[in-house]
Amino acid sequence: MSHFASPMTILMVEDNALQRRQIEAQLQPLGHRIISAPNGVEALDRMKEALPDLVIMDAVMPSMDGFKACEMIKADPLMAQVPVLVLTALSRDAKDRSYAAGADDFLRKPANTLLLQVRVQTHLRIRDLSKRVGTLAAAKPKVLVVSASSLVRSQVQNHYGKDQAFFLEAQGEGQARAQILAHRPDVLVLDTELLEGSAQTLAIAIHEAEELKDLPILLLYNPGELETWSRLKEPVADALDKPLVALETRRRVALLTRLAQLQKLV
Image 1: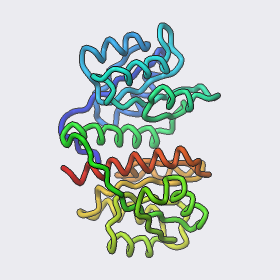
Image 2 (image 1 turned 30 degrees about the vertical axis):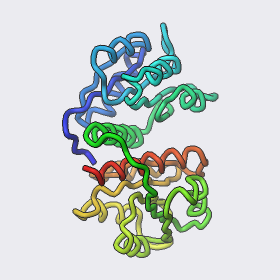
Image 3 (image 1 turned 90 degrees about the vertical axis):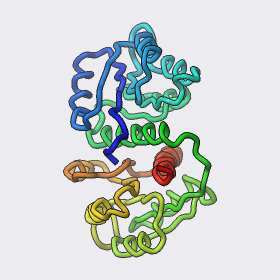
Image 4 (image 1 turned 45 degrees about the vertical axis):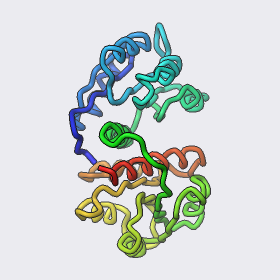
């Protein structure tokens, strides 16, 4: 999922120079062009000159905060299609305020490097494909949920909506491989905790198989588990920490469903 039709541009809106350099260092390995603005007002001016492919927006800034800037981006038909990821150290109600302002995604500072990288790559991949494909016709996706926990398997289905997808289940690596070969799911929701086998081994096998390498994987993880995944050459398309929260599960599965549908059309 690292191949793009053309170079991608990220606009980073951050008034703290040290934090801006830290985020740039986290994103540098992805190879995209990064431009910056110190506040919401200058960010809007830059976007009127040339649209970026993704905006990473701080929340607390002088002149215009990130919430207001996000609202103005999403209210402008020329800018609204650009995804906005709010990245902030604010804790109380910051996520709710970000989504209410129209943000496409949200992460807290300091962001885990792997989590930031996979979210950025997935949003940029969707942006790149959307430019080439255009409008999507909604189709019911096939979603394979792999977990040792029956609770986790049922939560993913209930959170996303059982009638919104064709759901398949597996408890371990062997079952998952059989389901993938038999049904070719559009999205794989992969828990780190399996009844047998290894989630990492399964993910590596998928990336190495030519016919499966674009299968988007949503990783469900426990605190502290992401570090080992960052060593993989092609990790996952997204990651979500447990215990699962309904709204966030829905957002993450929906994002990868959209990616999967766009990939089919290219």
